[in-house]
Image 1 (cartoon, helix red, strand yellow):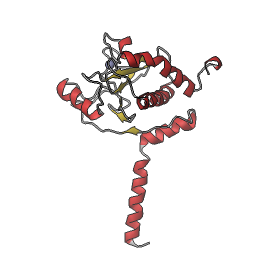
Image 2 (image 1 turned 135 degrees about the vertical axis):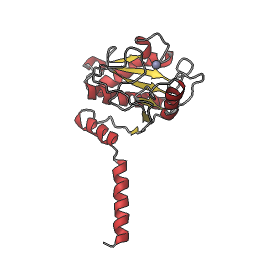
Image 3 (image 1 turned 180 degrees about the horizontal axis):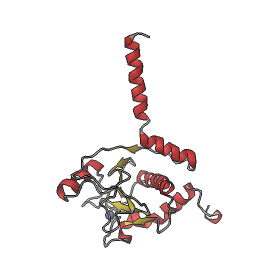
Image 4 (image 1 turned 90 degrees about the vertical axis):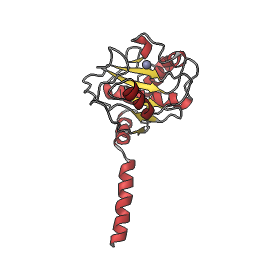
Length: 206
Ligand SMILES: [Zn+2]
């Protein structure tokens, strides 16, 4: 093969590899292990932190949030990162995942670190933020679908049962209206779908 076609081939290989990013491989691994229909992508972010987030040694719960902005609007992980780091003076974005209005799941704080999203509860929980204000609007179908997929994979990864102990709303642990009335009211249904995805649903629930 001449040099030109070698370069072309290498470039194609590099593109192929970057498409098979680590989280995709990981989610495929979950799917291959137990949850064959649950496949999704996570948009990676590599934010700059004012100080390095500490390692999280335990994961006992997943805490669901909304952004709670003045209007029910979309918000990127990058925008939240700037807000948390530059305005709030935290290390950086406090959530581990952000779910955009179109259902895109974005990486926030690295998966194995302690977050900054629920006071007194950060050392053993994962924080998922669904973009919007669900005291005045409702999550999109795409957001609920992505939330269900992400919870399915995370519950599998951390051996959590998606019940009222394993998957909770921010208001369950702190004095806040987060994640908004509409999303909070949808959590029982979301938990049920995650149970089903994990093969944990009881026959009478099918
Ligand atoms: Zn919250």
